[in-house]
Amino acid sequence: MMCRLQAKSKVKKENLDEAADMLAEFEDAEKQVSEWLEKGEELVRPGITWDSYDEVCQQQQEHKDILEGDESQPHIQIMREKMHQLSQLCNVSLLPRLSDISDRTGQFKVAANQNLKHLTEATDEAQDFEAAVEQLQAKMEESQAKLASPEFQQLPLKERLAAQETLLKDIEAHRAEMLVLLERKQRLKVQAADMPAYENAQTLQGEVAILHRAAVRQNQAIKEAVNQEVQHEAQVQQLTGAIEEAKKQMEDMPPAGQI
Image 1 (cartoon, rainbow, N blue to C red):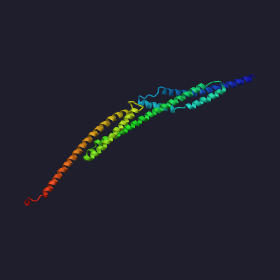
Image 2 (cartoon, one colour; image 1 turned 90 degrees about the vertical axis):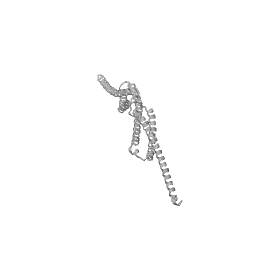
Image 3 (cartoon, helix red, strand yellow; image 1 turned 135 degrees about the horizontal axis):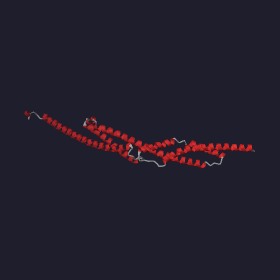
Image 4 (cartoon, rainbow, N blue to C red; image 1 turned 180 degrees about the vertical axis):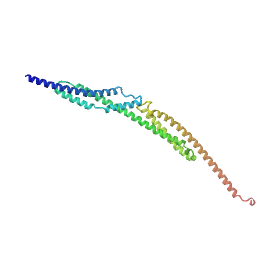
């Protein structure tokens, strides 16, 4: 009888020791998930801050890092296995704890992925906008260089007028692109002064206007010069014609002694 009691006691102790080990493993896995989850929940709780481009980029990286460091599923699986094993040994209900951490993990992942999506869209949008500003800046610089180039100034007037009108069309296209860029700027999710392209676009708008005015003035001046040249050529041609006509008339006149 005593032996049977001792054997039962030994089995019970072994079961309790095994249960304690399983509970420790359950709680260790729970701790791993909880520590990661608390950081994540703290990250998403305030929502996204759009006041600074640098902060937006930082938030994007933080969301990437926390999601890439996600090892919750293996730990939750361990918790599930240990809960099942413990239920075979003793009457301990770990389901509420497992359900709570599983639900919180799922909710956090949805929120974090949604935030990351919005942040990535915003930074991609800002980078595309910056590239568009840089492209227009390059076109502007090319047009400015043409307008001021010695080769351009030395062209014959009529050729220069044709080239000037082509250049003016290009600059008017720059103005149209600038308007599109300004509309895009108003739609940017990040309306922050620390975004490089934000200030560059404002500066570029003024430069486009100045270049357009200069090109229009120069175009008008060349047109006037061409008109004067055409008038002068017409006058010269008319005078040359009159001289030729007078010469012809003189040649056709009979000598003075034959009159």
